[in-house]
Amino acid sequence: MAEKKQCAAQSPNAGRRMTKPQAPRNAKNPDPVPTAEVLHAAPAVTQLAAFEAAMKLFHARQLTAARVVFQQAAAGAQRDVAQRAQLHIAMCDRRLQQTTVSFGTAEECYNYGVAMINARDLVEALTHLEKALAIAPGSDHIHYALALAQALSGDFANAHENLRRAIELEPRNRQMARQDADFAPLAHQSPFRSLLYPEKMAW
Image 1 (cartoon, helix red, strand yellow):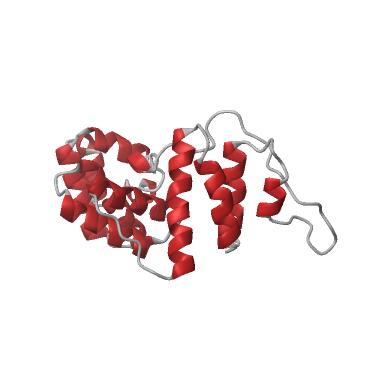
Image 2: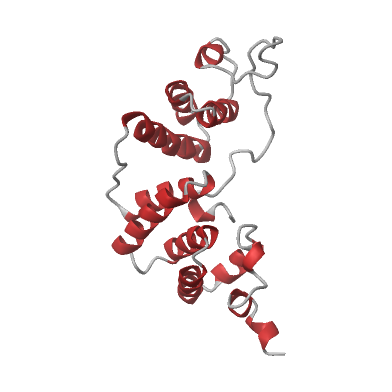
């Protein structure tokens, strides 16, 4: 999503790409996921490399180790990487404690919802984006993110309505959706085509 989607949105991979620390290879584990201990032993690890290593641990469901490394990334100077790390710390906490994440403001719900879109946890994304919209119903970026989550979930009717509202509130969202890879499969299907390319419908 075009950063995803306004928040969730700048990729932590922007700029120069760093080499990720890796544990020694062996026959049984040719490409092991780096552990928290390995990262602690490498003081030169960059903030971005720490975030990427933490994501590997996260996807391998090594949540305790992932949380430690996300904390390293959250302490760095790159604000966008730090924010994403903080969101993933909350996700680790939720999964480790098996409790419901609870946020008080619309932006907190929105940021977490976008992180869940990126992780393709669409049920969780929808829950928090709907809560965000209930708190701030006039926020175009929340309508946009909710439309995306609904589209990815196959709820095309509600996705169309929320995208229409997002564009109505902020016309620049039309161009954003045109360039959004996650909306691409729907861009030329009715009724999204008329919403995203109204000039073509006049031909």
